[in-house]
Image 1 (tube, rainbow, N blue to C red):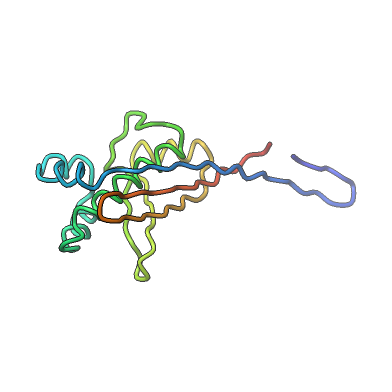
Image 2 (tube, one colour):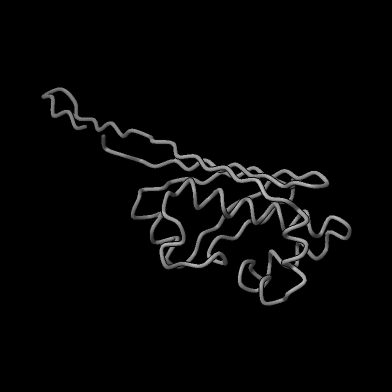
Length: 141
């Protein structure tokens, strides 16, 4: 919305929040990651290095990232749209907070939607991993 008052000009942007959530059984992912092809199809090299370094928590870390990628796709509302799961990378910062980086077609799609920020939260227990995602989409109204 734009105001062309003779005294001042301002533009108002509106923020639209999209959310996504996913839950996965750690055991299902644990079986899947026995195949390197599955790992390479779903996870970036950096994600693999992180998860493989988790010792006993390896499968849960892979499962949490799977849930995170699914939650991101749901929040974007796009599905893979010709992209791949490796175009969503979820890595932790020094404090342990997960951050999402998009690349390829999914990055292009997010830009076309006006996505300005993606936040993700991951959690896991013995049997389940879950993730929630919020994306901020700027709109003119």
